[in-house]
Every structure is written in structure tokens, then in C-alpha cells.
Image (cartoon, rainbow, N blue to C red; front, side, top):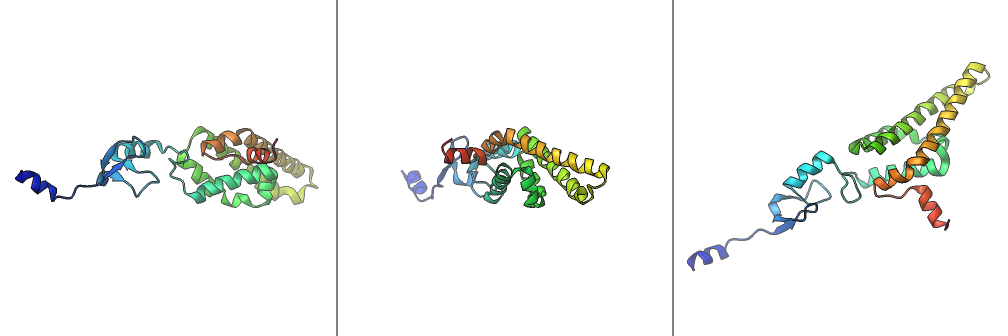
Length: 180
């Protein structure tokens, strides 16, 4: 009985549940500060390796998700040429860095589309004032065709891409809001 009395004076640690595996651990064995999730050491290792990015399991900030959503809106609302005209290419490096965190096949496809659109847009801007020269007009026209093509390519993958981040693409939001 004496032994029981000694242990009754010792504070017991609180238990915490791992958000991934659901097992309970002492609070000191759960990482509650570095992620949006409470992770045990085993799940934390897996999380670092796979960098699973789904809504609720993301290491992206709200600001980063907002940039992804903003790019989607700009292209689906204004077209890729509108995206360029609105100077959205200025954030392309941030956008690529965000998508590279997860680096899935769909992310790589979207990165390639936006890189090509940016390069084609810069090429067009470089040559647009000299289109009176036939060779330069041809370069500028090819750049515009590439920009349009990039817009169409993005529209084809937009729903899958945005859903992979737990968001809805602008075109789907728009058609759902007007009841189409």
C-alpha cells in the first residue's frame, strides 16, 4: 500500500492522440508544434518522407494555397493571356516553389504549363512592337499560339489539380454558382 501512495503523488502526463495513426501517446511523444497535425514519431518520419499534401495534411500555408487558387482564378477567368496581362508571371517563382514542395505528376504538369506560358509571354512582349518585320511577326504569332495552348492545357487539368489540393477550380465554382 505504501508503494501505491508514492505513485499517487507523481503527476501523470497527459495523453495525446496522433492525428494520422490514431494511437494515444504521452504528450511529450507527440509533435504538436511543427505541423498542422499532431504526429507521433513514426508518423512524423513518414510525413516528412511522403510530404502528403491533402487538405488537412498539408504543409502549405494559407497564403500559399491562396496563390494557387489565385492563379487558377486568373487563368480560368481571364485566359492565359489575361493572366500574363495582369502581371501574374511576377509570382511564378513562388508558384513553382510551392508546387515543388509536393512535386507530384500533376504539379509537374502545371509547372510546365505555367513556365511555358511565362516564356512565351515574355517572348511575345519582346517582339510585339516589331511585328512589321515578317520574321518577327511570325515569332510573335507563334508565341500567342503557345500562350493559348497553355491556357487550354491548364483548363484540361484544372479540376484534377485543384482537387488534389482540396480546393475547387474556378470554372467549377462558377458553373455551380449559376446553376449550370
